[in-house]
Structure formats: structure tokens, C-alpha cells
Length: 171
Image: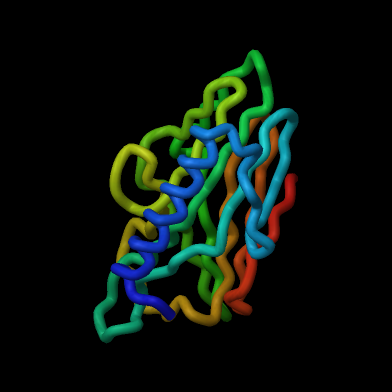
């Protein structure tokens, strides 16, 4: 497991490379093999392997946190994508435990023809969820189910305890 500082450096580097590719017109976003993908209409959602935090890992009870890089590719030439915070939730399950994590930032927006990358816990493009109350459970052996409602459907991203990949689907 990497520490938070290393994770943030890697995320910033990935963001710079993604932005450089977008600015130079180097094609569409490259999808990592470990990322989950869900397509609803003209919109593709991509969720990378998350960086998890919180719970009882260091002897301190605190909120569970789920943060990841989340990409919206809006292939529509007309419609703007707007996703409200209440339309983004995550469910953590471990043995007999079920905790709901809530999106902590503003709405997600992608204009027609735009690809927008949200990542980390800071800034205007932050993407993370937390439990409302501290929880004592460990978060290393459970599963996380990220749910994003859009246009009457739900993009579902499942991150299991194998710690290797995210699967995406639409309900």
C-alpha cells in the first residue's frame, strides 16, 4: 500500500499527462485495464482503482473514505451532463457490516463533447465519498460499490477485496 503523499503525487502526474493529451488532441482518454467502465447513452463513465482510507487501521476510529479518479466522457454534441451530489453514493460491505458513503463535493459537470477528469480530495475537480459518522470497521477486506445515477439509469462500479480492479456495469 502506498502512503497518501505518494498517491497524491502519482495522481497529479496522471492528471498532467491526461491534460497534456487532451490539449494536444492525442485521441480519447486511455482506459487502464484495472478501471471500470459504464456507458449510459452518449456518456461514458470511467472509475479507476480507488485509494481507501479510514476505519480502524491505526487505532483511531474515523470516517471511511473512498477517493478515486472518475472520468466523464460526454460524446453528445447537444446535452450537458450534470450529476448532483445526492446521485453519487458508495456502499461498503464487510461480513455483517454495511455502511453508506456520501459524495462530499459539488455536482459533476461535462459540457457537450467534453472529457472531464475528477480526482483526489482537494480542489474544484475533487472526487471522494465519506461516511457521515466514524466507523470502527477495517476497510481492507470488504467491497465498495460506487453508484452514480444519470438519466434514469445507474452506473455501478464494484471494487472487491482482491484490490486489483474495478468492474463497471449499468442498471
